[in-house]
Image 1: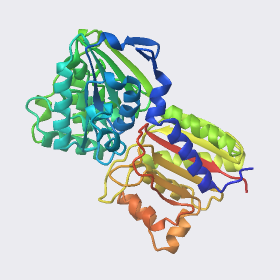
Image 2: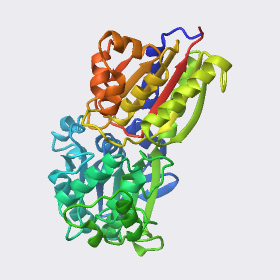
Image 3: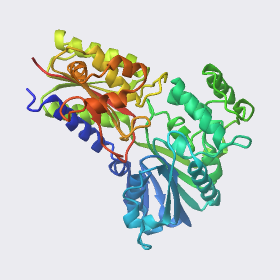
Image 4: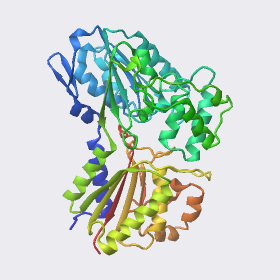
Amino acid sequence: MPQLDLRTAATRLQEAALHAVDPAVAICRHVRREDSDLVVAQRRYALGDYRRIFVIGGGKAAVPMASAVVQLVGERLSQGVLVTKYGHTLGAEAPSSSPRHPLSRIRFVEAGHPVPDQNSVEAAQAVADLAMQATSRDLVICLISGGGSALLTLPVPGLTLEDLQELTDGLLRSGATINELNTVRKHCSRLKGGNLARLAAPADVVTLILSDVVGDPLDVIASGPTVPDPTTVSDARRVLQRYDIAGTGDPLSFLQETPKPGDAAFERVHHVIVGSNRQGAMAAVSEARRLGFESLLLSTYIEGEAREVAKVAAGLAKGVQVNGDPVSPPACLVWGGETTVTVRGDGKGGRNQELALAAALALDGCPHVLLMALATDGTDGPTDAAGAVATGDTIRRAGELGLDPWAALDANDSYHFFEALDDGRQGGLIQTGATGTNVNDLLFLLVDEP
């Protein structure tokens, strides 16, 4: 029998999952230093053989990933440029303020996400410029994490930043999947879809990846800047036409092809996924068992409209509660993945908050049930919340406060609904701040005994 209330238990699961996907911890599981060699997933790189070592790339986990690499490479680091989301450079300032510290050799730039801004373009150009300096005598360490697609934005000739902002916003609001969004991004970019590897050739390139995409497809994570691209311009056109998206610059006429498998640009490129959604999910399962729950990982491939996924989650909770299926209470079901939201209203929220709100409606009146849905980077959509918590009592409590959950759902206004509801004990927003990592979303479904 669990000794903690469901809300406290869910918080423990959240903490365990985030610790398991800490970027520095993840890198150290796959990369180590042996004398003068850097060993990356059993491949050896004799650091003394290189004239220069560069660090480039981008994503929400850029700073902790860079800190881990600097610890391994040390004084051999020559120079670096990394771009991350606004507010995600915490930890880079103190050591880099010392001119003697290797981290000071890396330039960190903050830029816009999920919609790129001018900083995204300037930072991407700086990354491209440094990559083009690399020769066959250099080692380029590329650090990639979630958010890299927006943060590393260098439009193809003929497209403007404004065009890409309009395209990105339109696809996000239409409910396009991350795979579809990044298919378009790759063919609008001079860095994505393997183009960064082409710029860095013929240097040795090691790409360390913290995956934020369902299934961990290398070509989709941050739009695969150092990965051969299996998609084509025709694929990108079909996505834009499917959602009836077109920027003012007529992107269909400017899309460019990307380097494909077998291209010489990838001959000296090595990729390693150092962290993923599954690692976080499994850590949550282990913690739930330690706390006394029968725990089960259902899948890390969850996709679809957030409000529809919420109905499935509620159905599973009822199955556990009534029939002990697939496990008996006290039970914990863990999911991972990334849902989408087709925006129809003008409210404020994110996919995890919308999922929690829809789940609250589906779970109304069910006792001893709690659902936590969160984005592992700490920011769910354009909000300062990581997600939200719902229980079988959420709708009743909302009624006492005069809140209309159906109106909030129709307006895509889950943030303000949970903000008003939050009592710090059961339901409400999840506020973590920037976590320094990003491996998709996690959903915890806790069902206690009566």
